[in-house]
Length: 472
Ligand code: ARG
Image 1 (cartoon, protein in one colour):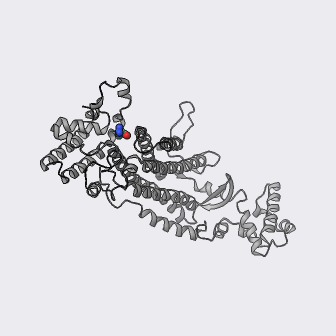
Image 2: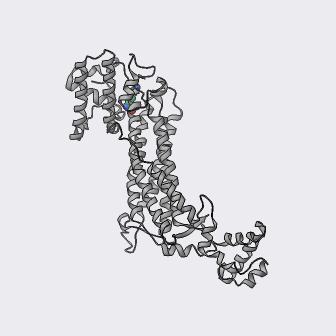
Image 3: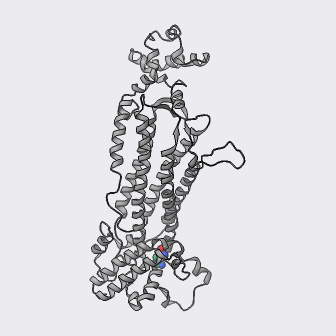
């Protein structure tokens, strides 16, 4: 029996009937739908609508539906079920007859789908936080190893993709740690706004019964009930916000992947791709291709597309529920699956990738990346910054002309450019000196990086969710 057929005299067009069903994809909401239905049943008993016998029949049947779906997934191949709500009602009635139809008293699918989706988002956030913890942990472990080597490993940092200044490898990796810690914070923020319970909101104006909304919310692990029934049944901000956070997270993964690809090319040679996460070419026997990294970059486009779909879906909708909102589900699931799928793989990659420290270190000492340090040296000797910049620029031009490095220019030639160059100049251009020069919190001087590593370690430890997700 359909959930709404009484008013209709003609059957639905069979093509339309099939096309409008959401059960093929919303069946994954079943555990949430069952939990929310149990909470509603408890509230109905509390309100005197169900006897305690009816309540226990319903609760038992709901549990059986869940068990059957888990033990025999073909149970879900149901061409009749319109959506997950209809599926549950149908199987309740099949098990316990008319009592099953009492469960829908005072409620609407509009509040049910809003509730199921909030539970889904909350569950995904909790799962993601755990995987994100592993991912950040893997980067931090590599940063700690690079930072505790003696001397700590260095590499070039680039601006405009041109060699800029040497930095510690640990400092570079900590840049990514920061991005992903922010993403974790965004997920936690999103969870707070998501974790409110729409049950009791009815179709739009509130349930047609005085239900214990606090009780339903508490049973499902929500922080409380939503405040407004019109908003609660039509709000999908929580889904959009979640997918936006995923898009940003995926974008960060994509930037990391792009840099790893670049650093694995022959021209850089900083990174040796792990074979376990690379593939070969069917044509060129010598190839080892960075497929994992490329797919991470590609998936980011997909997740951003999902975010874009959701905002476009919602932007023109009048209040309150409109069937358009059914289209929330697939992009939401797709984005969540994409990011959940990537995180364990990038973690595995990060744990096994080899850094070519010798090459990185060499590259950190070429390309005039000590020029700013050279200018700082003149400034320390009283030369105004702009003039020091000019003088070192001339020295660089001279070195380029001679195919030399700054530190190899004879003192006499330097003094011809500026009288303040003296015998201490060459030693201030050593890599360790240049690194130590950035002696500021947040900078790459080894003593600051050491502190930053400790600070990141503390924040990563605070990432793990403290309690088990309420459902599943
Ligand atoms: N399958 C629907 C959805 O996902 C459930 C809500 C249906 N509500 C309604 N008024 N037709 O949005």
